[in-house]
Amino acid sequence: MKHLDRHPIKARRFRSGQLFLAAALALLVALVRCPFRFLTGISCPGCGMTRALLALLRGDLAAAYNYHPLVFLLPAGGLLWLLRRRLPSYAGPLAAGVALALLLAVYITRLTGDSPIVTAEPASGLIAQMVRALTSHP
Ligand SMILES: [Zn+2]
Image (cartoon, rainbow, N blue to C red; front, top):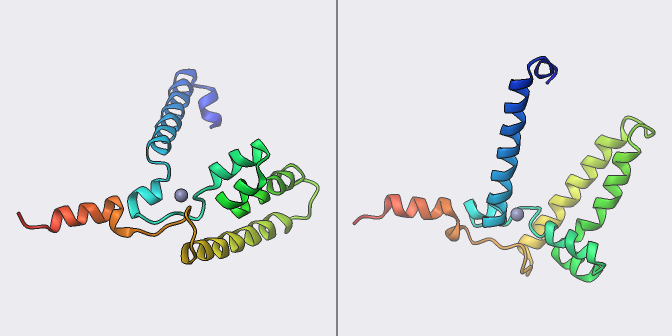
């Protein structure tokens, strides 16, 4: 990015491109909610996290837990990030590994359980619909 400091027009175009990409991603998420689920018909490990965070910000802890049980790790993760320079070097990778393991365990539990948030309906995904459309005979 340092070379962009010497070229203000290129830097302005780069920032405009970033803004456009961010706006396009925000629009995509707003329209389809979860891009992974939209494509595959299967919820992603983070499905429900936005709603959980909004519920947490409202102070509705039960709803936050129901949307995504790991939402309570976000404040802890933010605190770890703020203190990252004061922590030993292994703390970041260790926390990331623990968070990833928890995310995977919670995802499998929710996917195989009776969660209304995490569902698996591969036939409803865009990929399956496109395959059906391409392989169906007129
Ligand atoms: Zn998702």
